Image 1 (cartoon, rainbow, N blue to C red):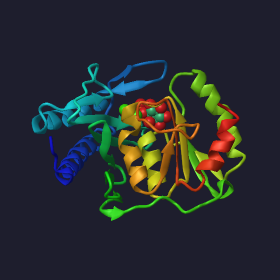
Image 2: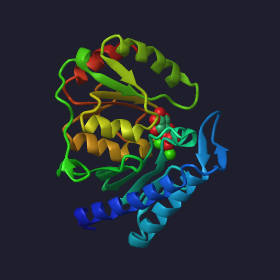
Image 3: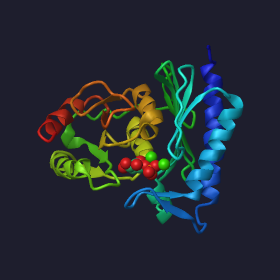
Length: 262
Ligand code: IPD
Ligand code: CA
Ligand code: CA
């Protein structure tokens, strides 16, 4: 089936805006919280934001596949599958640390062709479509031009569970910190990718993410001129378990450090 990508993009931007407004309105509310793991929370706002997004998608694309974080059933349709994180940065949201976003991506024929990430606090709408560049609030964005690791600001994230990835990343954190200007941890993978795309960070790595954490952000990074791979420099997949995204210029230098730890 043929889709008008610009129309889909405008649709997804509208949906992300609506979900973002809803999240913002509920920011100071007493939240009903459930636990998916040791410290991995899900609030009613995550679930309601997802309902808003899915109900709009189901009306417009009744046969679409949907992979959404808070749904038990994940369906894939080769024609079009939507990959949704209705609230990325839930721990931040719960604590009132204002760094979270809505993330919506569309996959057609197994290729991500659209990504939208909306930060409702800063009213920053990041988006990209395949081959048409990446944008922030309508202005084209580009990754940074910093070419040495020693001049770079990096970012990473840690899994909720204290698993092998957590401890491995603790070691890597130290090793990379020693080689750059600083390493940040925002607590929202979608924000990390978008900040890399617009040059606020120069490199980002993380283990153990899910497709909804990276689907939209990855196309935004690529379309902004960045590079994304696995931690050995191999092909990137949203279904992989490790990601290295950079401005392209410090990719090899980061890989060299990482190689000693994985
Ligand atoms: C989390 C955030 C965080 C990352 C975690 C993710 P959630 O997503 O993106 O930055 O380090 O691994 O699970 O649970 O807030 O949607
Ligand atoms: Ca997430
Ligand atoms: Ca989430």
